[in-house]
Image 1 (cartoon, rainbow, N blue to C red):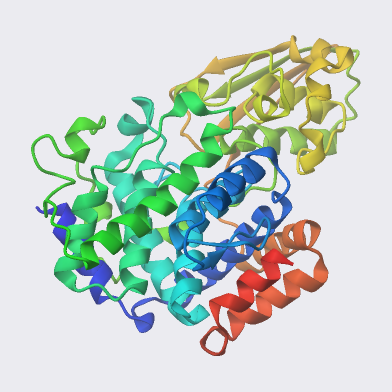
Image 2 (cartoon, helix red, strand yellow; image 1 turned 120 degrees about the horizontal axis):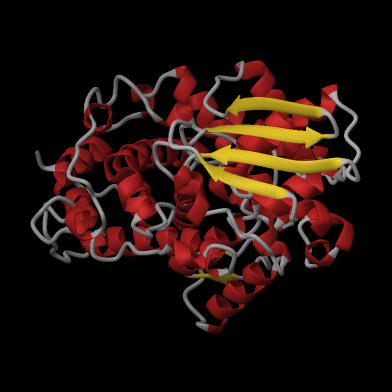
Length: 439
């Protein structure tokens, strides 16, 4: 099967009515969620640095940086805004994608949509098409690709962003397939960057890659039409286990995988969330005293041990990738949803580190990537709890949680303004959404 042609053809042929109401609901929730996270990250060091670099290039005035409002090339805006949107590591994730699908797809859509004068309805169509494709490609690459050291937000995200850009640029079917073949030689990103500015930069790289590949294809640049699956192509050189899950390639346009998206309600790596939720549930039933806790044991799928198991973090960024320290934060009543909780100072708090050093992280291959089991020895008590992030949340409850998160990051006025724009997408230009994020 030609995977490149399959997804290129699908990307070309989708229309707004190709998507069901569930897909549209989750698309709007993800866009609102990303806007809040990106807005809150505008002053982060990585956001400022990448924005400054792009400004210095003095590109054409096509799209705006949400950090400063400066007009730059759409490719530069996608790079900087993508890095900004992932700077806090608080944006949505997908366990089939094995990464952050909105992190690259939406910055691509915003930058190119602003350059082209697109409506939010056109943005929604391109975004939904892109994230559905990237979710399926991420599922094909799977955990063998991830465990080999690649960061799907950067690699798989580049393919999704290419579909977004191809859709907005009105590429032909052949041009879309060609763009996917081209980006297969551009997609990159390694997990060793986790805990540094390199991780959020990955999202910007993928967003920029998509625009570059689509624009080159539109200009007549020729690439392989089987760049993903050919001998020495992207899949076979990037840790693919040569398995082709049925769900990844079947029922395109009828069934959607993207609505299995998960949202972060703790401002840290999603690998930590199932244990943090399990711990929160235990805290509601028990009045833990940090001084009497003898041990906290966290059982998790082994794949997370190379992702978020920094034993003794030294920076706020590293703290977001530490089972031990986030467990200590939670026990001491720190709000793990609060961005300010993850600071350098917390890494050197003696009380916090006293608990940190009593935490054991235990690999358990019987647990899925969405499950954690936590055990706390507190005096004579040995208390256990299990949580699974894959458990479905009622849409009304989920919407309320995302709206509350959005208000906390954006303000109630901006959150309502963005929600209103998304609900009248055919009458609203992408410019208006960027205006809201810039101001």
